[in-house]
Length: 278
Image (cartoon, rainbow, N blue to C red):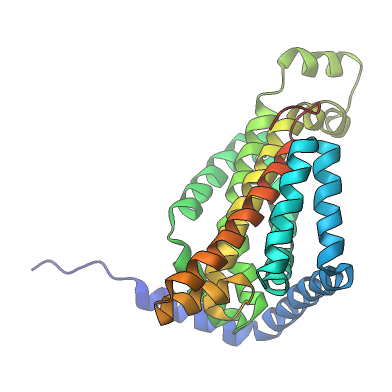
């Protein structure tokens, strides 16, 4: 008689054992994440909605052009006058916090992966696993380890959004022109100098594309993270689902779309070597 392969109990037991034996570490880690995200949220509140409007328009004009600056003005004015500016600021803070931690871990991991073939093989397999795992699954261990609120939402978002920057950092470094590497070696570069002066500058467009994709994935996951109390626009969307309120869902969804477009275009502009068309 065949028995189904079931290892869910073992994983559940391991997670609870980890929490029991390292609860202090997770409490400290949770406190650090919450303090960082709270600081960014305070910064967005200090800037006020109009300060964020000015930043979006100014950066859009600087990096892209007048047309996008006008779009940024109209989009941010819509967010303010639709009454979602406070929740949009929370969502922005959560997205930027998650992106920061994803880049803090992901870029060094991508560099290590590119410079060590064995490490690269393991990391790429791990990234495949992380990218194909359903997003909602990340909320379960995050909630067990960190409780409810911002920390589990940011932790789950970190796991979900980190693969693009790891992959594209790895790819960008490995695809640097071999002639540039040979020239660096010929001039006597040490491995560290070769990385900082040749490989990373050559891989910059790919790395910035990874940053852009990480921001987009963090934005999408932050909305889902409202299910564990992360807050922001996800709360409005979750309420619209619970109440079957199509109008609320559509209006809050439009705000999410506008924020995603702004973040996408502004972050993508930094992946270009020169100012170009959007």
